[in-house]
Length: 278
Picture 1: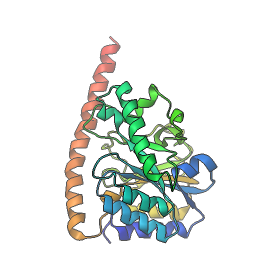
Picture 2: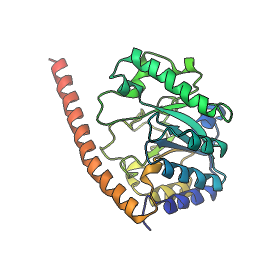
Picture 3: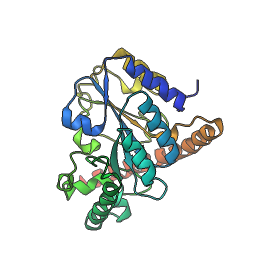
Picture 4: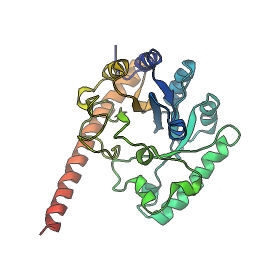
């Protein structure tokens, strides 16, 4: 069976339902601190209809997850946002305001306030916007989460940001970034803070042993890890063969470029460190 299709994602959901794991949104996790759980999080980056299809599939299994919407024309579709909210999914803001402000925090926070308010107006009669999550553009030099070095998201009625509010020493983090679950050197912005070698989850599950969705399913079936956070980008999961092949080829080319960016930036940082030590 091909990986990264809705059929394969359904196999993942079926596996979860047969275990003792509960599923939860990011907001639910931060507020209720459930025990054995899988946090399901989605970044709505593009291909809005694939996001809706995944939301409908989850809903058919009685599963609620989080969908973070970018404020761009391709994805900011009020009718689809409302459909997902009415299914019970959490709607969050996928902000990229440092990129839009060219790294200026003062301009960025003003954009953040306006775009957050736009999203809240869409969902005000259905649900609240309680969490936000940064979008990472590998071609931009800024990290959008750096906005919170200057400001506090709690001042805007936000309870958390998954990159900053979840302890990944205790929660096992898996992402399909790069259209693979493997922890390869292609993650430019989708990185987390954890203590390598000291993490509680490192002794129970080896991220290097996971690359396919089947590997993720086997990990879930083993129930070795108490808490797992899955970041799934629905635009990468395509059922029809033409779209699936196009996505595969596009992502492979993109991964080569991302690997180059990671290599170049790590080399530059090493040079800067050596120079500072002189």
